[in-house]
Length: 478
Image 1 (cartoon, rainbow, N blue to C red):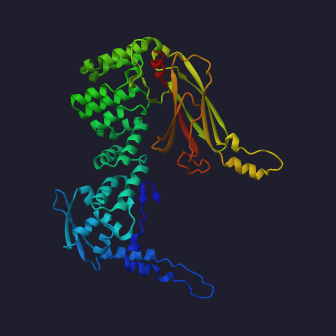
Image 2 (image 1 turned 90 degrees about the vertical axis):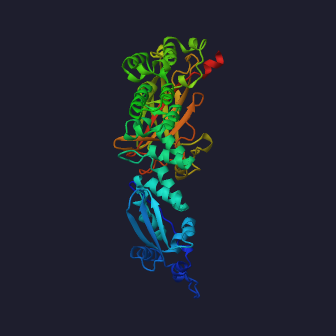
Image 3 (image 1 turned 30 degrees about the vertical axis):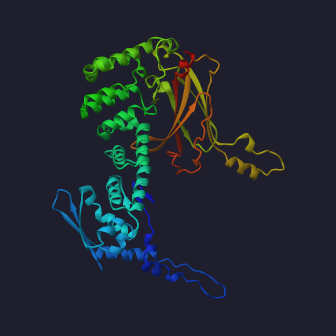
């Protein structure tokens, strides 16, 4: 059960305790009368309350935990009961096998939560906050409390977009990398990529590790305003972290300079102190970028290799590459949108525009499943069939007959969720190639009828459609 940024993990492990089996089920006897009626009387909450009182008062305690904070003389004493500890932790079972007093050393962030952690053994539930996630997961992992370990990991995956003053996703990624949780690691990496503009403007940007920075810059699915914004943020990161020269060279060579207009390239060459120091490292890339902007991509492809990441746009949010689309009351009826994008990122094509048409339908049915309107079919039945439809999004070019000079297009649709401090976070991304008009599986599991749907913000669907020009076809022509 979620309450803001808090999650309660319910665990009914009490059935493992023989004494509690008798207590919880004593009132569940079947009425042996003629009618055979059965009544369930549930006193499990009372039993849990009694167990918590045992911990609070130390009654009948047979073990003592002394929690010592690392690099401190502070000791917290907790009187516990072996049976309840060993039922969920084989580590405690081993530690308590031949002694009843344990001294456990924990880092400060874990020590402060240790009593809360122990209460979980007595109640099967625990409230989790963003700042508690890593230390609680660390404790659950260390003492092999598998149910809690999984519960906290699931909490982290579902709270990546939660509001945080200092930011938390970067630290969660580093933690997941350290413990080898590939699923959590990938969830964090995907969130960082899809919300990079927000992350770059947050306090956690400077905490990005060298390896994470290099990993992010290799991706083509980064969502940001422009490549120039990325360069400026990378320069800030370098100035604040002062990484090794090899890392600086690697990140500078990962910037996609052909995606930056010539006027802005001239500007950063003149104003960037970082480029002034490493001009020789990227001189070839800057020269290649200016060549890219001075000729048509078809002409350039005759002499240079353009089938590489340097010439692949990322998911840029600027109006040159797509359009935001906020659909109010999306379950109501069909909507349409027209917008224009540049033919390509080359300055040679900057004046050439392509018009795109987008159609959204909240309840679309394939022809084979559409109701047949006739007197023999009731209107109620036909209405029910329409309600079975799913959301549909189709994006087509209004200029399909024109020659696009060998450029193909990838259509990317971003779906925003959860406005935090005025921001919309991207949670779902759909990619469609030029040859396909319809976005497959678009919001396949979304219930747009519910105002509380995770896909809606204030009963509105927040989309951003991006058109990415790709030059792969030029290589085939060459």
